Length: 142
Image (cartoon, rainbow, N blue to C red; front, side):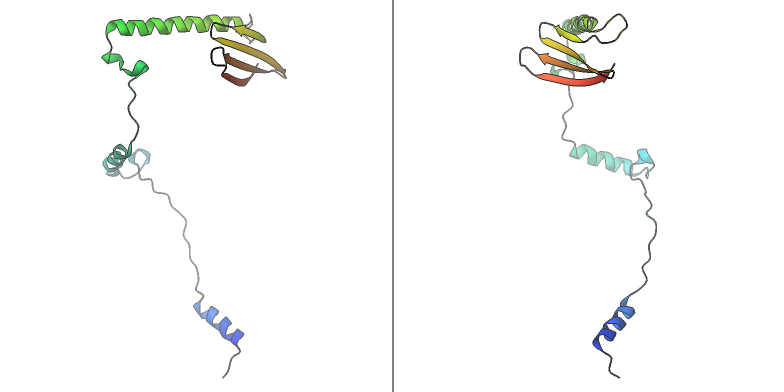
């Protein structure tokens, strides 16, 4: 019995072709914080600690509050208070009696703040650093 080559190829494919089976994918969490096996915690922490390249920041000014003298802590608090009052004074000029932003240009010692009414209840606010010329722009709904 002599089969043509095309029939032989079809016969080989039919013999070699098997049924494919598949199952659904099931997610199993690894981290115990998210429902994984609790014994994985120590290993995950050790791996994270070994690969951590970030240095712990020491807070404002490069030193921890606990490392500062009471005088240094007082000076930092005083500086924050003064900056907060300056920010409040600057924003009081930007806000009208109704609490909404007022279009216009406002200047402080270091910054120029421009509020432009774009229409449709949208405002564009541009802050310019007067010493460097750097600007920041964002849009908000009125």
